[in-house]
Image (cartoon, rainbow, N blue to C red; front, side):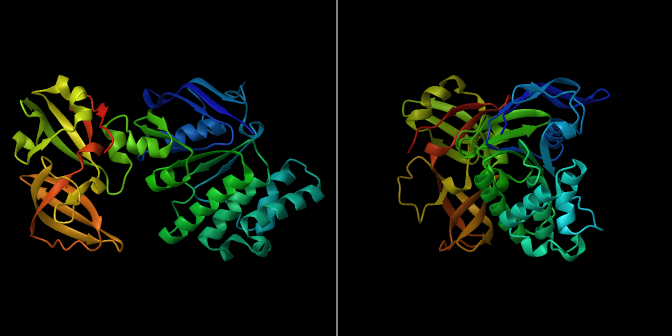
Amino acid sequence: MAQVTLKNVWKKYGDVAVVKGVSLVIPDKSFYVMVGPSGCGKSTTLRMIAGLEDITDGEILIDDQKVNDIPPKKRDIAMVFQNYALYPHMTVYENMAFGLKLRSFPKAEIDQRVREAAEILDISHLLERRPKALSGGQRQRVAVGRAIVRKPKVFLFDEPLSNLDAKLRGHTRLEIAKLHKKLQTTMIYVTHDQLEAMTLATQVALMKDGTVQQVAPPLDIYNSPANKFVAGFLGNPPMNFLDAIVKKDAAGVHLALGKDGAVGTVTIDNGMKPALGAYVGKKIVMGIRPEDIHDKVYYQGNGKGRTISTLVEVVEPMGAEKYIYLTSNGSTVVARVNADNKAVVNQNIDIVFHMENAKFFDAETDAVIGQSSAS
């Protein structure tokens, strides 16, 4: 098994930098997910770890061995690609065995490794088929099996589920999670899908524009984002953002929400008063997740100082819950509510912000100002 370390790694194409000083420590046996929007540099970073892209500057180490100049085949890494990359003229068995044959493994050991991997992935009954006779999910399992037979120090996955339909994506995601638990090896997984990051990762590195914005376990990133970008990237529907001005009077600290305070005023909970004290009279951004916006009719808590009047624009039934899109004087928010909520389009409703879970960001730097107290 292996720990992978990146030290100030850069990748430039001419004068254009696509990876900018990335430093990461990927622990042994972890399931490490690099996530971010398209073009953020995550796949390029993965390909540099694999040796498929040269490093412009910096160091990559596997178990404390610098691998910058070591060719891919000698790094003891196996990679699973987005497009499966199976040989169409070979059977499943031959595809899985091919890499071992190139390395001159004994025939008996090749057979043992292929059949063990096929058993793990539940594809033993497919060994004599060719790729064209397989479904997308089956092809992906064969691609994973081809990596497993090598018994590498590190598995690399480059958006392996993006070609699958939604149902199959969910099933295969579960299978990959089981595989990590079974193999107990280091896995580095690249995706733009936040759901994959939240459900698979032991640790998440969230990237933007070639830089790492935050590294933490997925729930820590969700609950304590480092900046506005991180807060808005993880979550579906994403976090709501409202412009705000911090105000203070004898009654306490308040936020005037929306442009020129047109949405209304809400009271800040005690835990955030010190952090926002330096922003009195200044513009900030308040972030609040859809699950922390409640229809006052159904709210069981104290809505005093937290209630805003809104108009229902769209209602999206999602089965066990609904998404309600609301407007108030030019600002829009989405609330996630229970399926029994009776709100309808063009209805005026009062909503309550669960301010204890609100996040606050510097309007100029997008950095988080502080974390609110627990409710």
